[in-house]
Each structure stands twice: as C-alpha cells, then as structure tokens.
Length: 160
Image 1 (cartoon, rainbow, N blue to C red):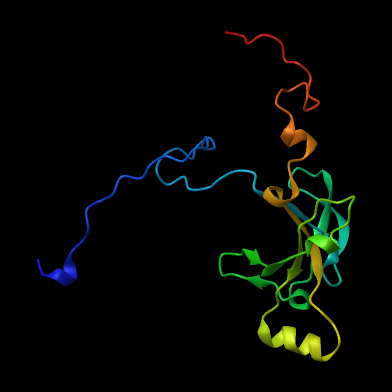
Image 2 (tube, one colour; image 1 turned 45 degrees about the vertical axis):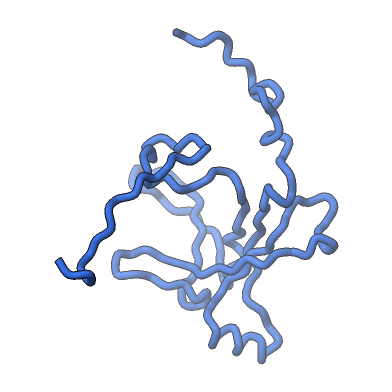
C-alpha cells in the first residue's frame, strides 16, 4: 500500500456529557439538546394564506398555503421544499426587556435577489426569532428542577 492510499485507524470517540435522544445512541450522536429555540411565522411569507381542506380520512383541517415562486422556495425532485434562512443577532442593548429573543430570522433568497430587493428599498422577509439560552438564561420551565416546579402534576410513585 502506498502512502496516498493510507487509511488511518479508527479513533475511539468519547461519549458526550448529555443523554442521547431515544434512537440516537452511539458514537454518532454529536448534538447537544436545548441550546437554541425559536419560531417561524409561516404567514410572513409573501401571499401566504390559510385554507380549509379535507385530509385522507375526510376530516377538515386548516392548512398553510405558501406560493413557492413568490417566496424563493425550492422544490427538489423528491418533493421536498426548502427555504434558506439567515439569523442575525440582536445587539444586547437593542433587545426588548420583556422578550428573550437573541436573534431575528430572515429569509435568505440569495445574493442576486437580495441585491434587487435592496436596490428597491426592500429587505428579505423577517420570518421569526431565535433564543440562544446560553445568552438569554433559562426559561422558568427550563430552570425548574422538579416536575412540580415546572408546572406538571406529580405523577405519583413509579409503577415498578
């Protein structure tokens, strides 16, 4: 075997300090839980609306309808639909005292479209917010140490 084909031996990966999610056990679990959370307002997309539809069982459900071309959403050959996002940190001195938001989430339509919008005096849609809990501090529920402190009823003794 020459030096160009050398494959290094496998290295042992130490487990992380957090408990893996069910079904995610093993050395490939590299995620830490609960660092950032947020929300996206689907009605912030251009020409988005809600509509009542029937599901496969015949039940009426409310659906969010978002026109793909107006919103620079891309559909793959497999039928998946993607939106590119960009999160901008809110300067600490500009954050609202009654909110924990640390970032705003904007749609990122790409450099060319972003420049066209900017030239027209417009900006990509602001779709939502994120909270970086390392910066913002834990919520009341995250800070709670017992189910009762988190507002959950005491489930009683374990059944085993």
